[in-house]
Every structure is written in C-alpha cells, then in structure tokens.
Image 1 (cartoon, rainbow, N blue to C red):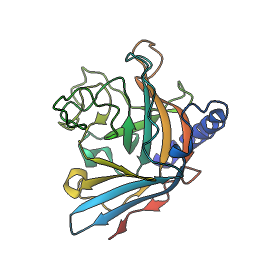
Image 2: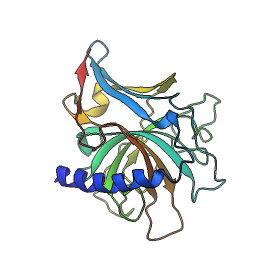
Image 3: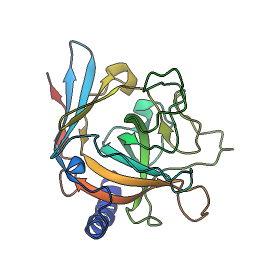
Length: 241
C-alpha cells in the first residue's frame, strides 16, 4: 500500500516541479537539496538528520501574509518509512515525515521558545521541526497535505506535544541547527521508538494554510522545489557513526 501511495505522490510532485519553473518566489539555491543523511550515534543514543543545499540552508524564509488564512510555510522535509505509531500517533495510513519549517504568521510550538525571548507564541519564523503524516491530495497543486481528522473522533491519538490542531502534526521541540549549507536536527532514540532501520528521502516545499475554503486542506503542499532522489523512492538508509 505504501508503494502505491508513493507512486501516486511522485506523479503529482513531478507535475508540481514543472509548475515551479513558472513560479519561483522562494525557489532559490537555498532550497535546492544536494545531499541528505540520517546518522545514528550510539554514544548519544540519537539520530542526526541533516540536509545540505546548494546555498545557505534556512536563509530563505517566507514573507508574512499578515493573517492565518493563506499563511506561507517553507519546509525541508524527510519522508520516511517509519510508522506513525513510532512517534506517538495512532495507527493510520499515510507517509510519516519529519518537516523542518518556517512560517512568520503564526506559532505552532506553544511549549517551546525557539528565540529565547521568554515569549512562547512569537517565533514561528525560527526553523523548527514537526512530525506529520502526509497523504495524497489532488486539491492542491503539490499533491500532498497533512492528514486531517474529525475533532470529535475519540480514536485519534496524538503525542502530548502536539499543537492542538485537527491534523496529524506534532511539535516535538528538537533544536534545529542551520550552518552554511546544512540544516540538521538531533533526535533521541526514545523519541522515535528506538527505530534505526528505515529509509527516507529529502524534499523542499512551499506549503500554505487554509482556514476559509471548505474543499481545500488545512495545510497543503503547493510547490515542490527539490526532490533529492528525483523519484521519491525513499532510497536512503540510516548509517551508523
């Protein structure tokens, strides 16, 4: 089933990549991925997730929309073969991904103060991580959205660090480090069910929030700037340090 989902997603992402040739608002060398790795370091019982780009990773951030509806989100995303249950969600169909994001119009990490100013609701533009479950979604040009659910559904399980939105999203609070061409995050083993045997890919995307249009997702992918493998085959494996 996951292979079928990936094939359908690839077809849609390929179309989105072509569309990006005409609209390149944020599509610069800072979002062109040239390398990615996930390295397990047994000395610190953690994995180090890293993306490298042609330019300076994290230097390009969105221009604010001034409101939540239509708010832009940029992301460096690791689609993986991990299960949603590995990071605290209930079992559900979709692709579990680690998304490193920046968005100036809102803050969705209420437990964390990324800019260390003692205010917890003003630092959405600072690069920060989310676990998300992605699903194919033809309602948006990028062909993907974060999977939503009914608020009244009592079977839904989210990690306690979730931001309180009706979709499969967590705000785990891991520190994101940008330096030169690299953006990386370190994740303790226990925060992902001690999984080290999985595959992944690396993608850079433009997403957008929707709070007004009923037939559009709450958070969808509208442009795809770069796919490291070119075919979203998730070919990369975790290495050991």
